[in-house]
Length: 388
Image (cartoon, one colour):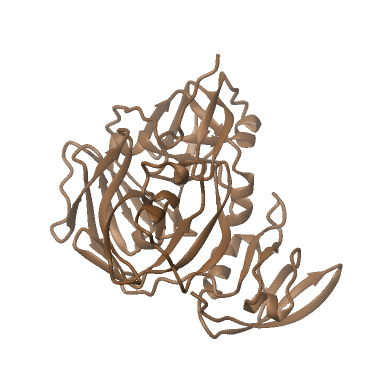
């Protein structure tokens, strides 16, 4: 039997009543929590408002004896893929139980190599529709509140949520462009997206948005393949009464997947959301925000010019996956395939990928990279610089 679903545009609700608080990690601005599938030991899942279905990594499912009961087409940020689905599954966090059917089995291997962390699934709409979910980025916890009795913090700002096709939340924002114009934007709220602000190709063309001081990049990666963008800055992002000055924006070139849809205008993601304590209330259609200590941090991107990834699914080494011309990485002589063993004499592994990337988001920093190329160990000095 063949069925078609849109991974980000389909939903169903569950009635779960337990309340729990669980630890989380934030890697690449994405929220990672431990989730058990059926009776198997807990595994790492992304907590993602951008996913209309909870999904499981395809190879992980096979290793756990979770069999496909049909086939579907699943749409992600980068495109559409044909995948199997599994039924009769239960996802558990602490005392919370979320039963689900028609769970897509998605290949996540390439995404895992890029993030440096083995992720076995994505916890999506089922959880958000059953609870008010309270994300404390600064405190490192996620709380699941009974949606009937939840009361937002007194110092929070309440922002209306709207829903696309009934399942994907969005917020209304105002963008001040480099040429001084202001435009209204309806942005999907996406805790599973690392960048802070992405605008779709159709929205950028409709409003003649250009980034004259931007750069062309090809670093995006999502379900369905890779993405390319024009990355630069706008003057302001305003939503819910908050103002983010000089934010980074990515203008997507995608013509397929969610970012290629004409009714999608953009995404508000983790680089912005991590600056708040966030409560997400689907039932009352509200987003509650309280500034945290990260609010005034500058919004920056990579200042090395190299895309890094784990070498293989054993996650034993960081390698240079791609380079951009005329950046510190290429000027210093780094090459694709170089293995980065150490930074300033300190060994690094893919488990520290997030910390490594944060080093390279600081301008005018000089590092001594110990690399391995063709079996030989070399030392390459590199100095970062801001080019966006």
